[in-house]
Length: 373
Ligand code: SF4
Ligand code: SF4
Image 1 (cartoon, rainbow, N blue to C red):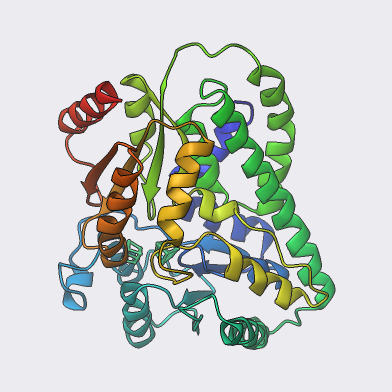
Image 2 (spheres, helix red, strand yellow; image 1 turned 90 degrees about the vertical axis):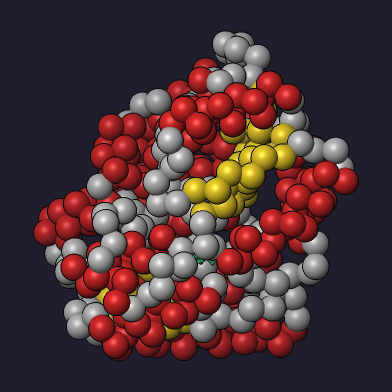
């Protein structure tokens, strides 16, 4: 796909990209965790919202604060923070979602001396009227908080401009997913992975411009006949920072045609609510978007979504990637599996750490699963 070099480079080295962006533009860079991080508000403040990923080094410093049975994402990020690798950040925003991120926030506040630290204490249960009102209040408070921390006024116009940018970018990401869903050979899983990661790292305007150039070409090629008859699967889980998964599935004759990932559909799904007030519009999207297991929106919301996606996307199976010690996803797994089994949708659980299991082992499991479909 056109323009992938820049996108891949940013996705491979998010901190390098952010530091050179800061030096080049003199703009602020604000780190955030999780797809509930209010990027549009950070963008409206003129700062680059940078999703923090674990640098995946050996973990030593973080072990003083976190048990080894915390997920490797949180431990890795804390390691980077304590080692000073994130010192260039102007601040970090912690949306309250899973317990691990909430505890990371406390540890960060007490132990990381650089940049500002702020919490956005979002509601857990999203399907009530009081949650709606509360979500709006929390985001309004965050706007004021960010204004103070960055010493800038965030106007309604700036918020609307930022929302427009995000709407356009998300629509473009959705179009790429649609193209791949129709013909998985039109764009590789690896390209999609790098684009999704870059959408949390790069200057969103810069990324949108690159995609605006590349996607029309993709659309022209999408009707070209599929090169191989692939076994279509859906990938489900939390963060999926594993570029090797996609080519491995493809080399074994499959293709990820849709996903339920924080680095996938949860990033671009959902529209802003039709509200005059920009903060209410942003809040509406968080309330109505596909949820992750750290939020509640009905007892069977996620299972319903997975089953529906498997049907709509004509997928033959679902692969669930579970990051070791990720409690919210682990707690959701039995009921997701039951729902998929009940509907006769084959599914495979793969437990991963910050590194994937050995290549051969993983290939054998993908191969056996795809063979069965
Ligand atoms: S699973 Fe939920 S809480 Fe965890 S990173 Fe994704 S969106 Fe955030
Ligand atoms: S949702 Fe899971 S993987 Fe993500 S930070 Fe929380 S515990 Fe870790």
